Length: 231
Ligand code: DC
Image (cartoon, rainbow, N blue to C red; front, side, top):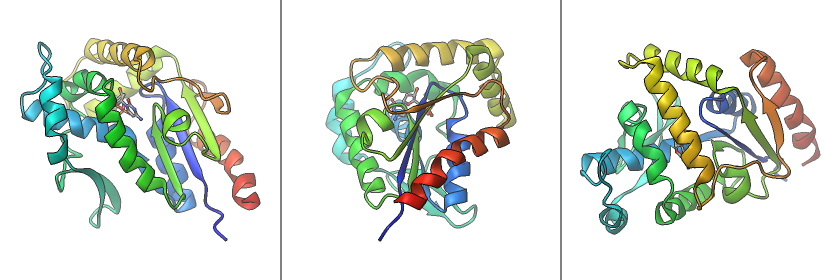
């Protein structure tokens, strides 16, 4: 009998979701899936095809092109990580830029795109043993997930964290750019009609401001143990 579960982690941008999801997945030997990377990969494609920019969005052309777009995760032996692939090429290195970040929430509002991403996410979770982070994982993608977390943190802290991450990745960026991007994305993610970011009624809400990552990992893990023993 499988005792594997699905762990859904949702929340606003830069609350520590992906870092904690990775840590839990590693500890449990589960698959970690960054669902935001899928929307970012699609946005990267749309930018390359010139379907979207700050001043235009040819939504219908991108919808028509969907059959030609394959987004999935493939294992990279060199770093032992699953990386998001666009038509069989790893795009991990390209999807964290501010250009993609500034447009991704717009792409993520469109139902046609979300349906395609959710199909892939369902396949990835079919055998359980998955930690998936995003905005709608506990509400729409896996409403029956055994464990759901909703992470939150103050805007100032999230901006500082994201700025540091991007500087560490050698992006040329200012604190103001990051502030504007995160505020814009929060607003679009929370207020969109399709699968908006919201707390699932059965999620465990965690404010991450005053804890270290180690403390948060232990906190989240303390909810996992009884469930994997029970299942
Ligand atoms: O997790 P992230 O910041 O990399 O996600 C990028 C964007 O993708 C985010 O602003 C909203 C969208 N997204 C979404 O709509 N649904 C998800 N499950 C994950 C991300």
